[in-house]
Image: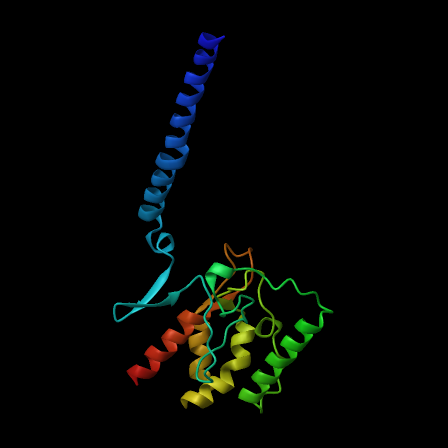
Length: 197
């Protein structure tokens, strides 16, 4: 019985150690190396740097609240907005009083920042995405904010519309998703454009 047990345990332990090395060490190292060489920016978090310092990631929304910037989608993460370690939706249903109050407050903030704007408020400016970290808005949501940002920066709405158009990404492969604008990239380009003048 003892010899039989040894003959069963030794191969099982050897296989356990071998598979642990292959799946727990070699495979992750190989995938990381391939990702780092084939997709270096995405593998490093799609970080954006200005003057050698990281200012954000193209994959995670940021909380812009100054009227001179385009605002992104609200964040569902807490206690800090756009906290990647707490990614997830609020899971509040459309009849939930907390969601209704939050949306009403967001609409009020948008209207207070631009009282002359009579356009309908795009839904993504008042509701969070499923991840709570969405870094992009629709071209319609950017167009809704054009007048406010142009006024705050003393730029013409036409100049701003051209910038939004330049930073609008089409549907992926022409069919997947919707056209979108990365808010961080747009705001950084806006700062750069104004610094150049």
